[in-house]
Image 1 (tube, rainbow, N blue to C red):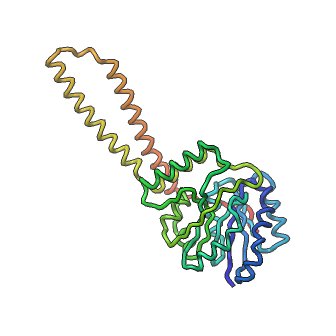
Image 2: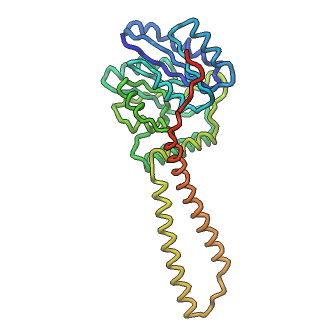
Image 3: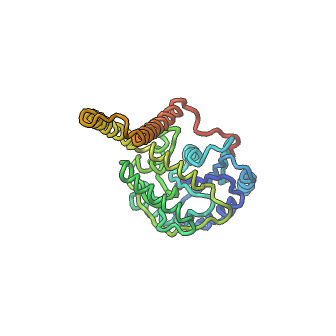
Length: 309
């Protein structure tokens, strides 16, 4: 018998806990036919509703259901890491509780593992139901990452992924505090098969990811897997040094020829303001990388557990 660990990060998902469980168990016959035992690991990310109570009910009914509840909200990245760290399965799959990751795909994902792949990942072929501006910036983010990062990141990729224990252990070996799992999946390598499916809207409740949170998350991804912003800021510094040197030569020549040191001060003020803004911008980029380094060297735990079943 092989063991499958199903990791389900939850934040205020009381309405979806039980429906997800019921939908997952529609694969029960497949699991039995293929000698697969299942453990369902709900990771409560400091929910403020009755998510924990709903999971407790399932645990009392089915001992395969486990719970790890955080002391506060640490974020989905921490929840996914906690799930991987506490999983016991030969195979591990991560799924959202809102059923946007269809459990019906599991048999097809296992088929990919049997073909010799180390992981089978999913990606959406459309973004139906999403605000157009959010979809536009999401596509631009993946397009940008392909250009500035050596790590493979697939457009439309979900966190819904079935992995072998070997790949899970490789991911756990990366114990960085500032985590961007989509990038980590690509960085560790291993053979991955991609399954495409049409976007599925949430069963109940509202998404916890607004535009601002996704924007900040994308910045985390860029800084975690690319040093291109630092290179850009350095090149901008070189460019403005060259421009400043050329302007000095121009002013000296103009003074010698025309003897007019006064005119042109409005344009000079504009140039000073622009270069100052560029300097602050580049300093901000450097500050963000420094802040990430500061958080890493503190070595704080990625999450803290309040309750475990």
